Amino acid sequence: MVSSQLPPAPVIYLVEPFGGSVRRQNPNMPHVFWDDAAVTRGDGIFESILVRGGAPVNLDKHLDRFARSAKLLGLPDPGREHWTRATEEAVADYCRERGDDNAEGKCTWTLTRGRETTGVPTAWLTVRALPEDVLRQRERGVSVATTARGFSIDNDVPWMREGAKTLNYALTMAALRWAGEQGADDVIFVDPETDRVLEGATSSVLVVKKGGRLRTPAPGAGVMAGTTQAAIFEHADSLGWKCKAKDIYLSELFKAESVWLVSSTRIAARVKRLDGTKLPAPDNAPEIRQLIEGALA
Amino acid sequence: MVSSQLPPAPVIYLVEPFGGSVRRQNPNMPHVFWDDAAVTRGDGIFESILVRGGAPVNLDKHLDRFARSAKLLGLPDPGREHWTRATEEAVADYCRERGDDNAEGKCTWTLTRGRETTGVPTAWLTVRALPEDVLRQRERGVSVATTARGFSIDNDVPWMREGAKTLNYALTMAALRWAGEQGADDVIFVDPETDRVLEGATSSVLVVKKGGRLRTPAPGAGVMAGTTQAAIFEHADSLGWKCKAKDIYLSELFKAESVWLVSSTRIAARVKRLDGTKLPAPDNAPEIRQLIEGALA
Image 1 (cartoon, helix red, strand yellow):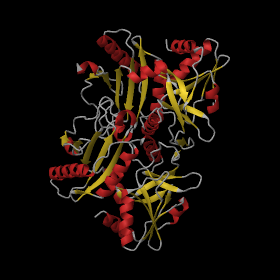
Image 2 (image 1 turned 60 degrees about the vertical axis):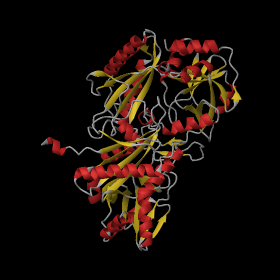
Image 3 (image 1 turned 180 degrees about the vertical axis):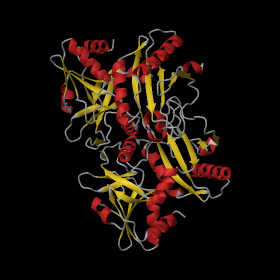
Image 4 (image 1 turned 90 degrees about the horizontal axis):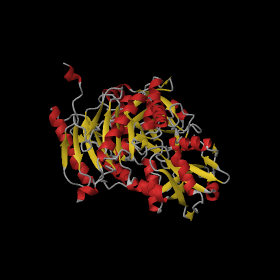
């Protein structure tokens, strides 16, 4: 039975960009036009949101960042209530159709500058099962290769839009393919001149140090502010952990109790190997996992 | 009659990525799926080709660059004969349907890494009329604002793919919107530390100097090798012009006989105003135009 091996189809909702109706889209039919700015220029923004227990996780932080990205790129304000409602509707469909009120999944929002011939932004969301490799890496950890970011951003330029979560990931994908050729699952970007740690390809770096300390590279040049990292820090802080966003250097990763890549849908993958060197499993791995999961509850 | 004001529909051909059939696509129907790498990651390449006299112009150079971009991104070789044939078919349709054997137009090739759920690259081409602003700028010239490139590329990184003409243009579009806010039509990117001239948003910079000299910034970091610039240099060289690709600094643009932005479909737009300063029209503008047009014949 070949069909049973195909992943179940995603739930797709097209969203009217100015707050009108949402409507279900057949996932077997394309819906993006040849002249959409997403296709011709990568000119759009997105968010990836974990779905768990029948609901989107960390919704406010994603709404905040989505609105911030839109503003940076001069796209219309997405509208909080609007995307919240569309997400709830799609997640309800997803859970019902899978016969599982607690189905886990990934919800992706996309907002583009729209079709050249209409000028109206295009907006849609998808909800689908988490890919196998995401679940496996969450469970078993990842082998990571460090590399330079490959470019440096000049934030003095008036039109610079660093911090917007755009669709321009071709270079990041090239870095991930390179990592795969080295036998690694992921990358951590590091400043080649100073060895300052930046971020994963699609994740924040979280470092656990002795004495109940959590560290993450401060957001800014080359470091996207992470929604999952922020949720973890808020939660950990309330439990008495000492949390700081500050500069971290590569040598610290090798000396840390543990190093994690945290992101919305993979949640947390422990770095078990870094540039070929094994990072020993920490004694408190279950505690850290519980801490991270607790932040998303 | 509103309908007469709508631009005529483009001719679209879907191309089988491994050299199979090509087929006409209804431009009123979308053909790109929600999980196409072009949409989710901007992970694909393109070329824009002028159509003139019922044929694509400068085809070999576009085929070369398309193949080079594909190789850099680890996409399958597009196949020269295949895209040539598809282009000829689409251009023939375009001319026939407009009742003009010499219709001018713009042909765009797109090749993406394809759908996440199939892994098969997606490929198509469109042929359509040139936008009004392209024709106007070709005729009347452009007002240009200079700005920094906004990022610098580190070509020492093993996975770096500079020189590939990818779909990642969100930052370039931000620069163009900024230029519009300054009352300019286009930008020229300039290194802010050295004032070295790089390129236009989607064009090469061509400088005409006294004594029959043509200059363009040497391709490399921050400067995409231009197909139109290359064709102009080959032609001009054969006519006795002294052509050189070398470092050019901003002050030279103000002292030049004339400055042009050259690209495939706009061909050449004279820079008539640079950062608010008027660049006087040269006596030999018709000669330069003839030279450039001759290179594309």
